[in-house]
Amino acid sequence: MCAASRCGGGDYRRSGGGDYRRSVGASKMGAKGVIWATAEDLANNRGKVLSLYRQILRSLNSPELPLSFAARLTKKAEVRGMFWVGSDERSLHNIADLIDAAEYSLSFLKKGQLPPRYIT
Image 1: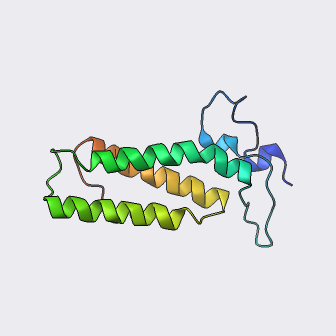
Image 2: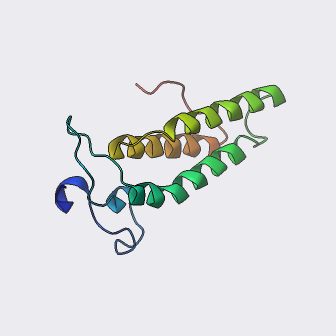
């Protein structure tokens, strides 16, 4: 178990629903120093992840995006694949990074732009 100050522990309900990173409870520490998500941690992130998934798929239907119908279907398939691969992730830090990346991409889609392919 790790101290709440080191791994961002705390109860999501008491934290006022702010940053999702603060909702991670005390988790097991792996042999390599990775903090693994508990079932409760995964349940706390589930609503946020489903919301991001739906918003991204909805945003790809925007007429502001310069995409043909086939390109829209391809992009939606890519998004489904990314979320499917991400669903197997158990590291709290990696989950937080994936959520950050999804929010970053969604910010571009809401502006009517495609997110950059590579972030340097």
